Image (tube, rainbow, N blue to C red; front, side):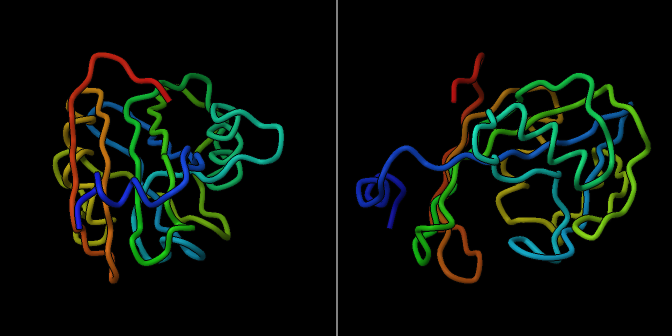
Length: 169
């Protein structure tokens, strides 16, 4: 099945979620998800909005909750649409942020265990399988709009990644 056919079967728009990566020099902060959706994987920090909260506020709150850091500056770097053929409730649009200024030191919480990685040596084998298709481009300075169709066992059935000048969501 391809993404175009699958998208015709689901309601639009997708629910939104956030993903935030702290950036310093040639490093990016990833965090090991300790529970819930994505458990056992390295990723950015983020999650779903609370009632009445806009998506930028969500990125700030989730980062504070998950690694105890107060972001001072965020920039949208990617918009990713994820479709799950076997569980449509998991389908979502993820707004990806970079942060280069924050207060506090990232620390482990009940949800996440943060760790710095060199941008050119990320643990892709322990990340979501889509990350290798878009994250290096974004870390390299591009803005990206992408969509991924997942099957069972996190298999990517189809995907499309495009570099863009600007992002809307």
